[in-house]
Length: 63
Image 1 (cartoon, rainbow, N blue to C red):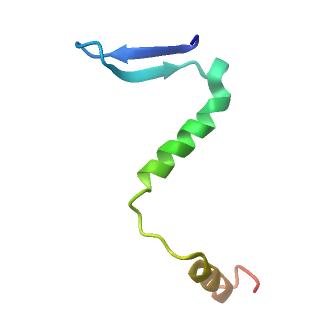
Image 2: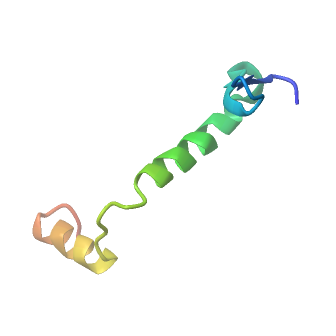
């Protein structure tokens, strides 16, 4: 694939990629979303109804 270069270690294993954003810029948002999602995998979660209740109580959302 043109516009993508791989950096390899001494054993030839791919360790990083350099992506030409002029060519593949539209993919960057998707890549970033995946990375953010993976980084938040172990974060504590709240049920949607609880979040809605807090927003209504704070006056930031109407019931």
